[in-house]
Image (cartoon, rainbow, N blue to C red; front, side, top):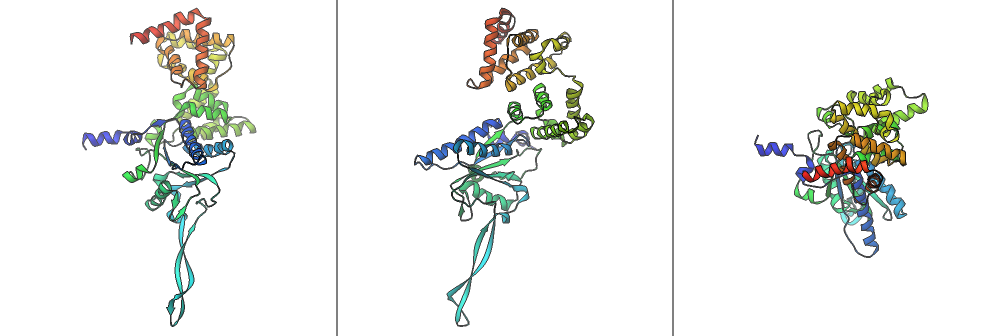
Length: 417
């Protein structure tokens, strides 16, 4: 095999397509805004084309969920019902959408044995998968398009390109979103990448976003153990290595299922960790389950929530990590702390700010710099940026030690680099 072919196989799907990579929430807002702008243009008398979106991303990242969110949010924001039809390509065939049905009509021009005969023709019957009410609005979602058979894919190409099936046009207020897993080695795909196919859609790739998951988990009242586990260990949100091995792997969707089990258990007789061990191993895998149970039951990890609310409780453990030169764990703790702060955005007072100050001052300079880089990673207009910046500015104004021993050294290292 040539080096060129090997390099092409090693490329990720989004690299081969050369497309944008965004968080799932950013993709949701992009699509929703485009639909609103399209409707607005029509209302103002300008006939712009609709855009079919192709959302690609790892399994369990939330691609299907955002389609329901888009429909619900458009219903609320535009004050008109947005329906949703979700079709699962792997379990459907072309005949599930359209079937030719023979009809018989009397035809005076058809002479049979000297008398007017009967003419045969075909009427197309369209299934309930096809939106028929012309006065409705909605989203037609093609889930796992590239896992459907070729005859179904050909029909769905017409849906994506013409918003039609055979000669039947979809209602004008209906939009199309196509969803796929990436065509990487972890997935069994049947991707059609001809030039005509690629031009029919606007392709966009969803990365795994810890913040998006936690924002969703907090809004949907996930069990606190799930929220705190991912805030403490953001890297555990998606177990790509287990996925590559072909084993059960942790992902946002599996954490949501585990949260439901925890809630049901707690409402019944309380959490039974022996039973959770069994249930969780089938959702996250046994290795990740051991880490989750150690966190939830044995409390072996430093919880970033404790850093903020009760630094004295975890100070000795943090000092021990620093004394042992365990910069990896200190780095993980700092990332977890920043994740907790930017997703929970807890209210703070003088005592809480003192906890933050003491925590930052004890950190090695390269680890402490993660706090500043986290702030810088957000959009300047985002609530996360404003929240973290306010804490940073408050500490600068209130504490000379923060400026002298934390901020100035970081700036000096940055300038020398």
